[in-house]
Image 1 (cartoon, rainbow, N blue to C red):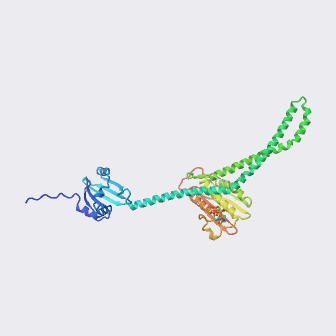
Image 2: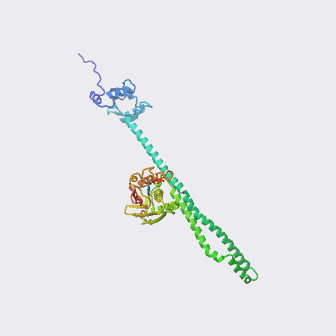
Image 3: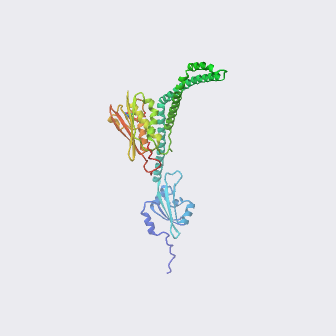
Amino acid sequence: MSPGPTAPAPLWSADAIWAASTVHFPVLFLDADRKVHGANAAACALAEKLGHSGDPAALVAMVPDSDWANLLLHGHWRGIVRPSPTAAMALEIHCGRAPDSARCFMVMVDISERGERQRQYEELQRTVDRLASTQEQLLQSEKMASIGQLAAGVAHEINNPIGYVGSNLGTLQDYSSALLALVEKYHEALFSDDPAAHREDVQQARQRLDVDYIIGDLPNLLSESREGIERVTKIVQDLKDFSRVGRDQKMLPADLLQGLDSTLNIVWNDLKYKVRLEKHYTSLPQVECLPSEINQVFLNLLLNAGQAIEQRGTIVLASGCDEQDVWISITDSGCGIPPESMQYLFDPFFTTKPIGRGTGLGLAISYGIVAKHHGRIDVTSRVGQGSTFRVVLPIRQPGKEADTGADGAG
Ligand SMILES: Nc1ncnc2c1ncn2[C@@H]1O[C@H](COP(=O)(O)OP(=O)(O)OP(=O)(O)O)[C@@H](O)[C@H]1O
Ligand SMILES: [Mg+2]
């Protein structure tokens, strides 16, 4: 008996198909024409779940034609597909082609959760960005609010020199009329037939116009006026430095004591009637920082120190440094802070001041700024005696090698 026609050998071995049955993600065995020669239970279950009556062939259709052509050409393809444009499910598909080019396989991994995690991550990232920009706005509005709070004082500071420069100008106008009148007298005398006969007349005019006094007073008036203009220019400059803010500002080596003095200039009008000021400065190296933000910290601490002093008191400003860090301290002889408040000092909106006087943001914002500079604020205080706020900052920001001119004395 001649043997009958034998069935062609299966494309994929039973072992391979059995091995696939032991894994929990969908595996399909195909030929180069995408015909299914085997599929594991997970593939059939997925086809059922997607509404294809358990037919795994429907899964193969998810691979776009052009990508299948690529698979045949290069031997592998990987892509992420969604069963339908609106589906929440996302599948990562890996396709491979055996070296004989006839056999292909397809493995599918459900990455919906990964997609969800990615979406959550992106959402979180957007929230962080929004928070960063809100914080920046908050910083700017706190700055503007403190400028608003100080506006009356600053206006007064500017008004003062402007007042005396204005009055000096009036006096200078009178002086110049007198001097011009005298010049006229000299001119008349000089060009008369007998100049000597006018000597007495000129002398009397000189006395009447008080020219000797004018000559003595003129240099003072001019230098006082010039000083007044310089003070106004300085205050305006300090305000400009102070109100500058920006995401792209770079940390630059800066003179912190100069910043402290400029800031003091801005608040001085609020302090001068009740505060005796002492400065115990030790010169500091230039410190890598965002100067306008550090000035904001000084401003908040100076305002708090002033507000802690009810009637009259002292504010001591001091500085010091070692190899790595510099510090600036602001000590007041004010009311002090009760121990139970210490832990809340830097919390946003913690305030003991009446509504309208304090928002409780000054220290929270200062903390954020100093932390951004890798520094810290130390506080010591005794109720009834006063408080010291000490800002400690690294001379150079970590993660950067030595840079330009960081050791000039400030
Ligand atoms: N030098 C100080 N002496 C005594 N108490 C202080 C001093 N500095 C801060 N405090 C206390 O810490 C609280 C929080 O200070 P913070 O600067 O954050 O807010 P604020 O001064 O109340 O309001 P804002 O600064 O927003 O105008 C103050 O209300 C005050 O109770
Ligand atoms: Mg404050």
